[in-house]
Amino acid sequence: MNNDFFFLYSSILQEFDCVDIYKQPAFQHPLLKHHKIPEKFTSNESFDRKNKYKTNDQICPKGTVAILRQRSETESVHLDTIYQFGHHVYPSFPFALMDASSFETIYRGAQADISIHNLTLQNNQYSKSQIWLENGPIAELNSIQVGWAVHPRVYGDSATRLTIYWTGDGYKTGCYNTECPGFIIITRKPSIGSIFKQSSVYGDKPSFFGNWVLYVDDEIIGYWPGELFTHLNKGASRVRFGGNTFMSPDGISPPMGNGYVPIYDYERSSSFLQVKLMNDKYQSIEAETQMGVADSKCFTLISRDYTNETGNSFSFGGPGGSCGV
Image 1 (cartoon, one colour):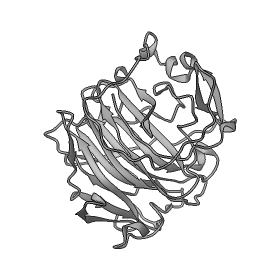
Image 2: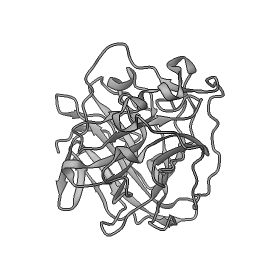
Image 3: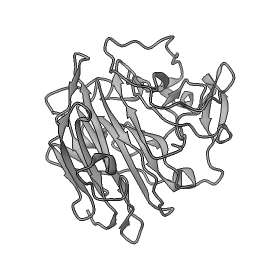
Image 4: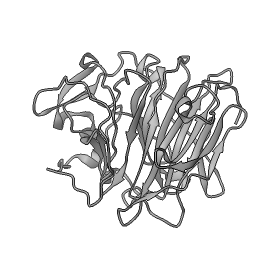
């Protein structure tokens, strides 16, 4: 199960519906017809965490979960696409990524403290900062993505929100949040799709113990059942940290990160701090953050020296513009 830790401010309950836990969208998936939610999720490894933020204290009634209300208009949301360079698989849109994985190893999790920023985008653009956990060949890639996104076509605004995405077949299908069956929410509090109320920092940790479970502030938000995947059900072979954007039809990319080229002061840059992995023995290990790659026409990525305060870390981002790929 994948254990993801987030610390955030939740958005108002008015955006969410309280739905019977076994009548939520996830259980419409044919592979989950007989799935039972585990009574508890266990781990023989834990990352130390400080509770930085409180979540909204609004809550759904017992036996129900908070599901983000879908927008009334039906609108096609562009699925992510990818390309391959050697053994590496990257988004086909402008990106700045730190590939912290090895193709000789299976990973059970990843974590980082991710800075949060407010951006203004056009309706046909998006900008994300997130962690990718992946396994499988490009044509049938299994991918889980967790972080924040500004995505007007998904949400109808330019708010910065906790956002998840998954695909089990190389992006032929896939979806954000709970827009398709798959991710099972078990919290009664508003979570997936919640607005971060201010620019700040939050911690994200995914880990695998059979399912991929998402934690927020030490509370389980939900999980992707292992039945959904043909490769990630064995663990992740690729782990990446960073951001990517989607360009408008005129070829203009929105900003990434905080919208500025990173500088030496990480507190004034868009950054991933305390970047760690969980190895196949469920041990927390420092991630090597020296394999950065970015679309240099628009975005920059710099590794930072290790300190006790920041751990293995890097900064990234840029103003966007006419990038090309």
